[in-house]
Length: 481
Image (cartoon, rainbow, N blue to C red; front, side):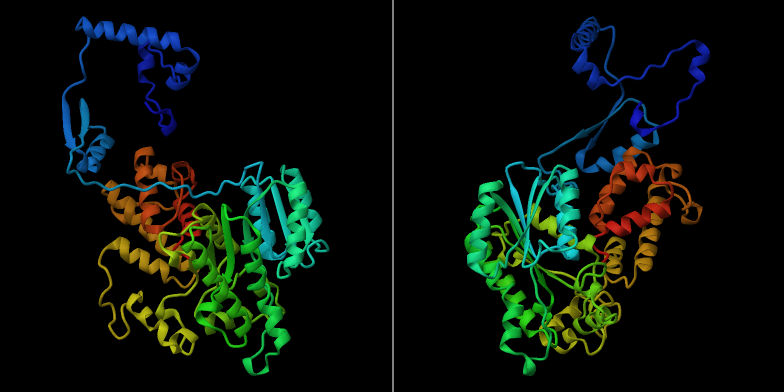
């Protein structure tokens, strides 16, 4: 039996002086190959002598009916072997597999973070260290005097990462050239960059001075352009943290929006040339950064109402950055080099918000989670999985999303085991309901495809209660903002 499935053994055979022994066949082959060879040789000799024969009966299924065969095997009521037969015209579901985690453990690479040690910059540095980076160069105009500089260097050293913090205004080309020449003498070549530099000088356009325009636009335009020209073309990634304000527009931020628009355009330009580039247009970040640190406690709510976007967590930002690092070249579709994040469903945008007053966004009504305006639920899919996707994307709170995931999980388990939903105890774990490693794989694939949450078979089987597991899935779902 499969020991990893953690099934309990029936000890009745021990009353007949039987002996049960567990061993790992793979390790046995590695460390005692001759014994395995002799056993296989003896087995084939018995086969030649017709002392043993193949397991029978055999029942064949087309590979397209794999689920039916697996269900039959799961029930444990079959005798013999179930065989899956592929065919030239067979059609079946597959789950694409991609590397979702960035690997930054190259000892001969330095990664550059531009934008200092504020909330987002510090989180990016810690994320790189966690992903195995061994050399990180962090720059901003006043990085060396930042209160977090020395603690970060110490954290990096403790984990085998050489973190170097330097003062540099990347908007000034001579300073950047000097910095790169210095780092080339003491550190490995720069292989990737995250441009997170920004400066806010908010005022309405009529009152905007030339100095305010320049001070806000320089980090985004001149700074990013200098990185584009001064860094090598073979970078593994070139990530720009742009802003949704460049897409939607925001009163009093014409300068900041222009700088972000430039980064979006540069991402397309680099992608068209086959170079690494992704611009991520972020909304307000709820737990770190400018909005969180602002003395204006109502800033976040005001931004969400006026821009029509919801704030996101730093964890979501890091997942977006990781996706940009894993898939850095978007030459197949230059539009994919710009990721717009945080615009909510049309019916969740408040009346008077910029998107509802700008005709460019009116087509969003066609994708409204409640159907097109004035059409009620017309056009809404009847497929439960599609409905779940739409409802999760439109969930207005974490508790609402958790309730949706919990209900969907209960329904899925009820379907798998032909149970009544009311019979399922959500205070117990999934394994107590009957989920084994085989069903866990199916649940994992369903959660990845529908809920867009990555979980492991171990987490499915070992999480203490279904409610705790639903909370884990909700936190990892890409649909929940």
